[in-house]
Image (cartoon, rainbow over all chains, first blue to last red; front, side):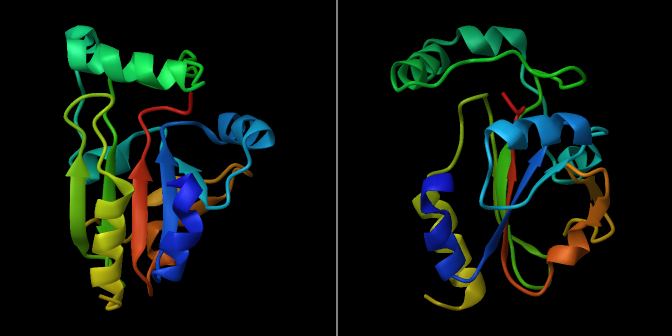
Length: 133
Length: 35
């Protein structure tokens, strides 16, 4: 998404990145990894629950498909790091598009740690929500 | 529909509500963790 942030903005949308991190950890992260879009913390994970995001199980990390995707990421240069203090490694993520009234018009709740929608799927939902299709 | 009064914490310690982003479509990306 970061690589296509401008495209998402041109389609009429803002991007908000939500993490479990506390503000001090967010500040440390941003010092080393500045982002073009807002990033916020939800240490209580209330928003994660509100958006219906669940948790995975440890054994999921051992599934061949999940292992393969992690290995692919590592070969592409991604460096795995341990979650910061207070973050739940089993928490799953997700991607949503809200329309201008705050209604969810696209929801993708990850079923395992590496499961995300494509940027094209998200962009399509943004274009529909902003009426640019 | 998520509650507009959901509040997030920003890196500077201040709070921001989801409602602050209303008025245009919004992509919300929930990361598993920062790492």
